[in-house]
Image 1 (tube, rainbow, N blue to C red):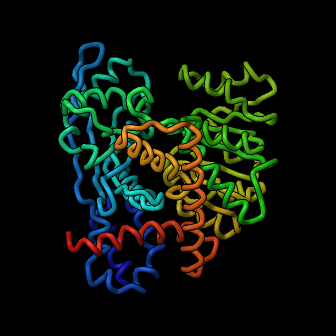
Image 2 (image 1 turned 90 degrees about the vertical axis):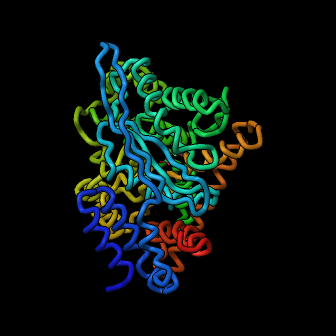
Length: 442
Ligand code: GLU
């Protein structure tokens, strides 16, 4: 059996119950197989066995007191996966579904994603099974402070720089940064996604959604197409989804539907972002959209993927688009898919897209704009400067265009032109692997 496949088999035995992690590792290792097997120096150095094993995994108790005075306990995580090319970097997710398998899959993806940005950032991810939905600001603050009381021991601006993810936005980053600063007695850029008044970068909020659309537009332009005039559907009305809608509209696309877990809005005249954002800001119900836009339709409980479109942008969460959804999209004329979320398409869905010649931009390339802009925030913090929105946005755009060309070149070199899954995995892996080789067995 090939070296790569034998490492994968070992992993499947060792972490058999970590289904999301095994899913992500399988996709990555299968993509890397030919490349790694053609470079026997990796096997001689036990490189893959080291690559798949996190450098450090921290699991901890997060006790806090709710508004009724009751003691609550959540479980916190930080997986510091790989620091070969820079300090661990990656978001924190607060969601009831968070467990070690989810954090490990996200951290593994993050290693390659961060490498693709071309910046000096290693891979990590963390979070807790805490649900900020329905909690008061004070409860969220007490939770965040307790979470940092432990995480404090493991992070610093040179070691590990967390940021947001699902359930962690400006409010949570503010509370965590405040508690870190108090414990450390030091004002450091230890988090990214901070408020702009205390070290955050302009355009960081927009970066993941904008970056996704920049990369998709570049991929389409290399195939003599563009977003202008195309029908687009998006899942997720959070930070990533709403900014993807905004940028796609700016580039002349007609975004006709947005879906999230309660259902799907169809607005053939084009999604009205002001209405959508007003509903999200008050954590209201998607059904309210129709009150403001009576010609629109709300389909309760329906996924967005049944709405005919030319471009689909899954921006919600892992495995939200399965094989049946992919078949429906293809049958309805969808020709381009860009992943704004992390691993939103199942492996079978990706295979269906590949089989039907759909242009497919995988998340670790397509949604790298968020973390890339986090690295720009780190640069600004280190130099004590604050750049203009346009300067950050211009840099983001060129980073996304570079990522596209790097993954396209890697796919061509691997003999699979247009297979950006293979391209992204090889291009991201190569830099990390070579840095690990140079640093010896550590
Ligand atoms: N959570 C985001 C991601 O999946 C951003 C991470 C960061 O900015 O560090 O890449």
